[in-house]
Length: 144
Image (cartoon, rainbow, N blue to C red; front, side, top):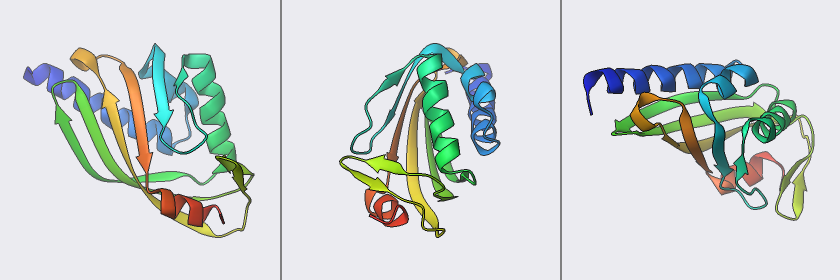
């Protein structure tokens, strides 16, 4: 991978994290390909594709977790792949389904470890994002 491509991927990953922490859905979508695929690997969540479906899903996340913040622990870049290790801190404000159960607001903040695997061909827009979370911490944080 060339240095300019690595720099482009590094810059894109930093801007993406900042957009998530700002709850800037337009900013998030601007850094993704129009047909990007997102998959939150949690029971009950299927792959979602395309800007409008992602706008709706991300809007739900920020409404349910209005104080969502991702604290980056480590970032790894290789070829066209970005791996981000981070901790999500948030407080649930509305029901959040996990499989057949639904978390309800308790007012208690949660901390959930997460890993994103992002595909960024040639430093361009992200084409896929797979998010893996600590399922036990998530369920505990949701009161399940």
